[in-house]
Amino acid sequence: MNRLIVIKGAGDMATGIAHRLFRSGFQIIMTELDKPTVIRRTVAFAEAVFTGMAVVEGIRAEKTEPNKALQIAAEGKIAVVIDAEAAIVKMCKPWGVIDSILAKRNMGTSIGDALVVIGVGPGFTAGVDVHAVVETKRGHFLGQVLTQGQALPDSGIPGEIGGYTQERILRAPCTGIFQSLCRITRQVKAGEVVAQVNGQPVRAAISGVLRGLLRDGLALTAGLKVGDIDPRCVPEHCYTISDKARAVAGGVLEGLFMMGNCLENKYLDQSKLSS
Image (cartoon, rainbow, N blue to C red; front, side, top):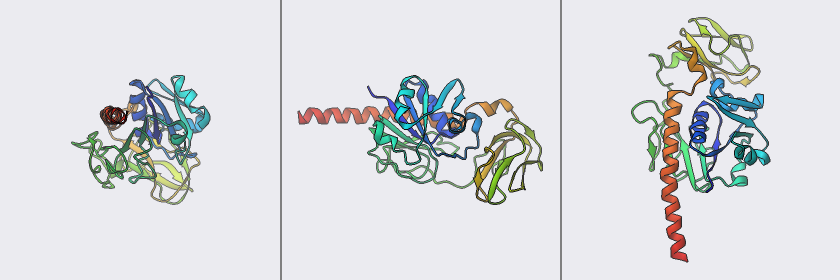
């Protein structure tokens, strides 16, 4: 039976999803932009766009051309393709499509894209443009599978880690080209300059481990998120999938099996009636 999944996006959240689905026996193709602005690069298959391959917790992803993606997936690796419009969905006709771009709005996903279509986070309506929605907001409902309605709206406030929310996020002070001055895993102090945009400093507001940082040379707009500080100060966390991504991935896996079984049975019943 076809168990090919196309995942839109290859950031750390999408990577957590891909990792769990891959370990559960699915073949995975991921789509990305040609210059993804991913913060948690050490746990994102999007890094394959720049380096040709990426390994996260023992699972390997390879950048490839769309016409070779099915072969890479069949070889037991995750295929990453540069495909901003996700045209590969029509090309390979997957069993499931997961929209994990996290754009806070639907960028073109349709409920007819595959047998099972799941939207991750706000911006989707279960039963309308997707079959199910998985909650991404930290708290009591994180990872919940919704078969009706929408996920909780984006508050604009980052989830709390170690007692901090907005303070742990690094943002571009101006529009320009990004340049890092520290590496991911480094312990930084409040007030320390960790990067710059067009020569203007990006300072840490709190002390902690630099958990994520953009790649050098990316063009940014003022206010864009460029880094993430973890006040828990555990460098090893920089190389492992987050608790949030694991919870959301569990919801996606549940949604795929729940909706897949339901829809497959429905189609089987309809085919019996028409025969």
